[in-house]
Structures are given as structure tokens and as C-alpha cells.
Image (cartoon, rainbow, N blue to C red; front, side, top):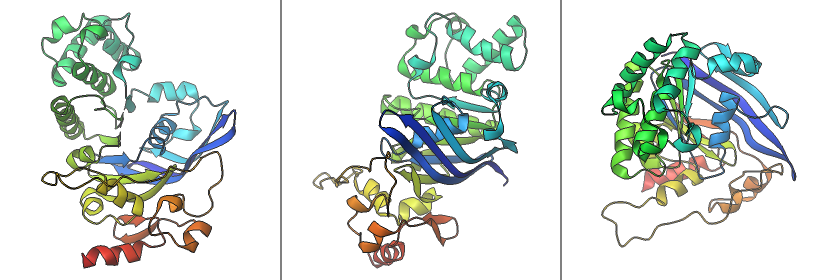
Amino acid sequence: MSKLLEVKNLSTKFKTERGTAHAVRYVNFSIERGKMMGLVGESGSGKSVTAKSIMKLFDPARTTITGGIQLDGIDILAKKEKDMQKIRGNILSMIFQDPMSSLNPLLTVGEQIAEVFRYHKKMNKQTAKEETIKLLTLVGIPSPESRYKQYPHEFSGGMLQRLMIAIALACKPKLLIADEPTTALDVTIQAQILRIMKRLQHEFDMGILMITHDLGVVAEVCDDVSVMYAGQIVESGDVETIFESPLHPYTLGLMSSIPKLGERSKTLNPIEGNPPDLHFELNGCPFAERCKFKTDICLADAPKLKEMQEGHHVSCHHAEKIAGREAAV
């Protein structure tokens, strides 16, 4: 398969009152057409900043983005805001974490979806309405003709998220970025939303970047996964490999902190300590202060991503040791 999105050495820095915060540090990953990649990590690890950097949604006066972002042959970082307005919602779309903050409470949901068709596809009002009703049906919203005339406050959380999916998919984008699309939804609605996204991914042959802290979501719907910590990718590979043979201490920590069915008496193992302050340059491994495998080299020398086996990359000085330890278990 050909690569739809290629991110190379992506770095994002922000000007703040405390100085410059280096939120994303030399990130590399790619997504193939028709595939879904999960980007996981705890809050503050740089997941959403990575997504919004791809979308170019930050104020350029306070933000510096370097590296390379190629989307279906388009050099995203070279594009001006006027060009990005034509790209966003057309070939590149994003579902945001909080639907209510992304929808206009003064417009009907039908108007807000139809606006996408009218802006990007130059449809007239009637045609845009017809396409909107088809799209509402596609994402599983009942009685779409009557729902078209309703306002966001008249929808439940699950229905609002379906609306966000409908808006994002209106122009059948080549890449969809979903930023925590199931946060605050109960497990039944969460499962419905994930099924809809997976089905539409196959129907549209669309690439999806799924941003989440929920490893259960990744295991259920993603093909590949990249683990982020302190603005860096520390481990990446296909879902089966990462879940069966995690080799970075941070990934191991994430896995061991998940409750497992049938192990009620077993206590959870949280990752102790806090992530580093991204206002400072990092010397050595960013996870070293929280890592039970750390040695002197971890504090002095930053590890680089290396391929442990085909497609499985790990940024850790002790990956071979961990691999041997896991094999012996």
C-alpha cells in the first residue's frame, strides 16, 4: 500500500510566558491508505499538538512548526492559510474532543453540515440539504429529515459525536484525524461510534489517525500504533506486536496500569512520577526518571528509535534486555 500521510522530524514549539515550550520533538510516522493508526499516551504527551500541527491550526505568531508533513503528495507546511482553508474539511478533516465546543448553538445541525457541501463542493442550497440528509442516515442518525432542523442542544452526547463524524466526512476526506472521539461517552455509545468509524473507513478507503489514551480503543479498531511520551514517539509497530511484545518501559507501564478481567484481587500498577517539563531541553531519555530499568547511560544519552524487528521501532537503551526478559516469561 502507498503512504497517504508521512510525518518526518515534526517539531512544534510554543512561545509562552515561561519561555519556549517544545511540545512535539522530532516525530516520525506514516499512515497508509485505508489504515487506522492509533497515537497513544497520557495527557500532555503531545498527541493533540501533533494532530493540530498536521491541520496547521495554531497561531503562527506564537508557534513554530518544523520538519515535513506530506499528505497525498501535498507539502502541508508549505501551504498558506488560504490554501489550508480549502484543504481542511475537504481532503483532511478532524473530529474534535468536545462536540459542543465545535458546533454553533445558533444554527441548526443541518445548516452546519450543508455549509461544508456549499463551501467545498459549490452545491446549491437544495442539493446540499439532500446530501446532508443522506449523510445523517449514513452515520446512523434516525429521522434525519426532522433532525436536520434541530439545534445541537437537542442532541445527546452520542448523537453529537455522530454529527461531528458527519461534518468531517461530508467531502469524503482522504485522511481523518479523530481526537479522543469517544471521551465522556458510555461504553455502549462508544462501541457504536467506533463501529461507525471503522465501517466508513473501509467504505471511503480513508486513512485515520486515532488519538486516544484508551488502549482498549486502539486494540479494537487500529491497525498500527505509536506511543508518545514527552512529545516523542517512543515505540511504534502494528497493534498485535505492540500489545503482545511491548519493549519500551513506558509502553509496559501503560499496559500494566490497565485493569484486566478475571484479576479482581490484583492491584493496578500506576506509573509513578511526572513527565518532564517541556520548557527545558531534555538530556538523556525523557522517561529515565520514572523508569525502573534506568542506568547511567539513560540519564546521559538520549536513545534513538531503532528497529527491533520488521516494522517494530523502540527508543530505549535497554530494549534488547527487555525483549530477552519478556521472552523468558
